[in-house]
Image (tube, rainbow over all chains, first blue to last red; front, top):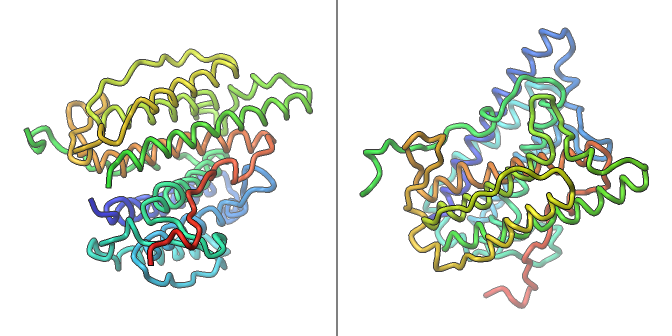
Length: 175
Length: 175
């Protein structure tokens, strides 16, 4: 098992879904005749991040996960997006960064010491970082972004989140 | 790497958080003088599962994940909960089931053929099932449950979701 499989293809696929969510957001706004950018500031509670920040956070968690597991310095991506076009570009930047990684980059990742500034010099073992922090946090932000759009009436369904299952035909299964 | 680490302790920890979310739900209802059971039916969109079903789904995904990865038959847990006490019991049932698993049960889990009825006889390789279906689906339902409570004013914060990071002190890190 290589932690590449648990990160790069999963983050890439799920972040790419955001483009379709934004297509549906724009279509819904056209239909209802409102400015789709207003949904960038939508949130489910007044003390919760708005949609744009949820997407930025998911992008950042994907980026930091692969960087920290492989011992690289993550590039800085300031949270400056103010339009849907800019948010699409931010997602593409994250997906393109994920695309620079290869399975061999993740050799030894499970035991690598991973740290964020909020850990104040302490670390998580790579496998623990992935299971207990990175994956829950990535899905937390991406699901909340999806929920904000759903709550506002964008025509999304579960299949817009849980896409592209690598299902095998019966004959492909080893006996 | 053993898939036990990516499943049993993570699901157990996150499902146990639900008890605290329900404590805060009851405290909020007491303060605002409404019946806390009403929040079991709360949802973010009219065509989305309500809170109770989101928790039931998270419990089921945890249960099915460990059963399918280890080649066991998952017990049936009908979705009959109508009160907060019953929902707490449902979560406890899932957590207790998770507690019956040991790391050795997961030997070979990565390559095991995993299937749900919706796959119509097709399968996912165990590692793919975990990365592409089970973990995203578990977090999707648990995060949505959390978001429903947040949206309704229950005093929850991110630390009620992302709990118990197994952070190591600096001296515990291998040189």
